[in-house]
Every structure is written in C-alpha cells, then in structure tokens.
Amino acid sequence: MATIDQVRVLSTPKVMVDGKTIKIEANSCEVQIGGAGKVRAVSSGGDSTEIVHGVDASEFKAHVKFSVPATAEMVEFTRSLRDKANHSIASTVRIIEDHHQFAFDTMFMVNKPTIKYGADGTIDVEMEGKHVP
Image (cartoon, rainbow, N blue to C red; front, side, top):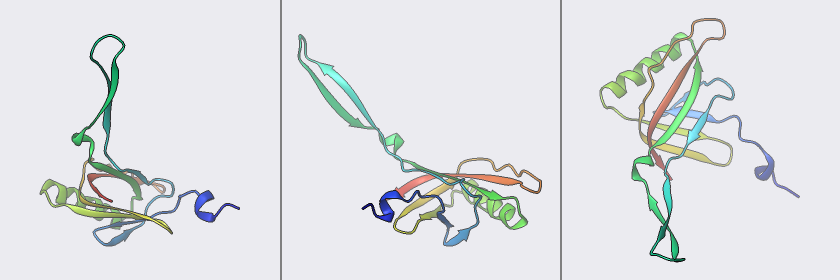
C-alpha cells in the first residue's frame, strides 16, 4: 500500500523570506533548484564515439517564484525586497512542506514588481540565488 508521501501532491507550501512567513496566492509557488549539464557526443574517427558530460556553472542559480495578494502589507514587503536587491543585500528563502523543505540563501529579487490593483489583485515575486542542499 502506498504511503501518504508517495501519493500526496505538494500544493500548500509555507513560504518564508528572511524568517517571516509570507501569505501567498494559492497554487502560485514555483521552485527551480538550479544546475545543468551539457551532454555531448565526441568522436575520435571511424565508429569510435563517446559521451562526455560537463557542468555548466552559470546554471547553478536557483529560482523561486510566487504571487502575493496586493495588500498594503505585501506592497511594503515587495518594495523592501526590491530595495534590498538594489543595494546588493541578500535574502534567505525557505519553502516548507510537511515532510521536506527547500532552503535558499543569497537570494535577490530579479523582477520589477507590478502591483495589480483590484479585489483579486496580486504581485508577482521572483527571486534568484543559491540553493542550499
């Protein structure tokens, strides 16, 4: 019989930025851990071919994206993240589910936040930096 961990879809993460829990829009959290390799086929002539793998260090940065409601509190939150990034001050981000978590440090906001005014208005937050395994 399958365990809950094997069949439960991860859908309600807790998002923490600099130790503060952030209220996010449902189903808006995305995590890209980072890291990539290049796989190539090389030949030394004739039928002799080999596969080689190289690590692309430029792809090591992680990406975290989520949306927050356009409340006065969240407007101030996104403004502070943008200001920190503009002054090269890093943030830490944790994405927490029941049985696992992702930790990121040296994270900087990379988008220009757009405040969508309205009853269901949102602000998108995108951050890039280092995944901590």
